[in-house]
Length: 341
Image (tube, rainbow, N blue to C red; front, side):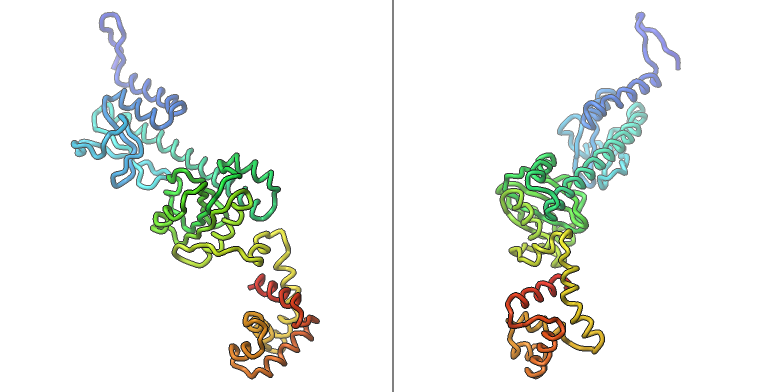
């Protein structure tokens, strides 16, 4: 088609109009995001449109409040987005001009959603690194506070932590929370008096395991809440409340401390003896310590005579050079066994 004139004013061909609208869409997306892009589509075509998530959730629309599906849904087109938003579609009425623009809009939405998802993923990783460094005591409290503030976490507030395995993508849709990626977990940080239990039911629908820790106040409180949630999520499928932190977990939470290496060195004589002689010194020591240091209770647990237990305890003292009558030695051995368990 060629350009024609009406009353001296140029009239754009359909092809020219499409080019102009497409060009404007790039600028609109950069300046006003997806909402602005959909508004421009409606203004150019005269047709409403929406970004939807199946089966019937409207993510955003033009005009705002547009209901999906419309009464004349049979005349609508649905274009898949194929971005990191499950079942996302661009929905618009079918007209010649709208059809020509709809694919372009869907492509731009796809690129924008991928960009946003990449930014969110990067933010989750950075926030997770801050929390991980805090838990490991790899940074000072003041540095942790500065980096948490930059991540949107108030270091002076009270926090609860939910650790989630096989987290649903919908975590990004949660409001008034901070989401972080820490190792195999997605961490949801709640601030203030907000109860974590309002989210556990939602998360339990699609996550394998959910561990709940806190609430505790301040920078170190966030660390304690994470450790509680980490212990809880390790108990397997379902939703689990964190237990009060114990000393072994606190010691082993910092991988920069050679806790396991020291533990293996303490226990190496017993491990070597059992390997060489087919002995039961490690098992006997474990039961002896967990039954309160009672040879009688240990013998009952092990299904052996108490004199057998006493003989093995003497061997343990001889092999390790430690006296089991010493509280310090018992604590040292018990922590070592917990560390290598």
